[in-house]
Length: 211
Image: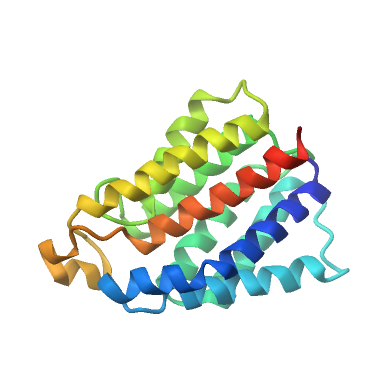
């Protein structure tokens, strides 16, 4: 996938994330501060403006993802902006000379992103955060590097979905949900759901573009 295709993929993803705002807000109203969906909508609205700007001309895959991450970090605010911005920026920095995004790039992007998110905030699998979806996707990405990108993305999206669903039975270790203790059981973490949605929408674009 070249940079032009990456732009189109993230435009589709951004529009779909904006449409997901009510569902994400509802999830966060139960166990969080109630603003996660609004923050995601604000961040992905900013991405649309970035990619529609004629001056946005990244020279390689890494620069593309770093600018995506910087935009999310500066526009979303709060913990979600820091976490998702870190994912995109750190993953991008590991791809700073690549002109094409493929299954090998995807694995590096997800793994370096997950490592950076863990280093920044300390969250690990089982803590009921977006890391539960991200780390599950990264593990699968490592195993499917020989596949075409559309198939690799689909497998990663499935793993992220399962990771997000798994947070339903966890007690949270971070954020407002931590204070709820076992009362948070039965509800998915909104950040994990957002992570799974991002990969799902990326996979949908790839499936249609790379037939």
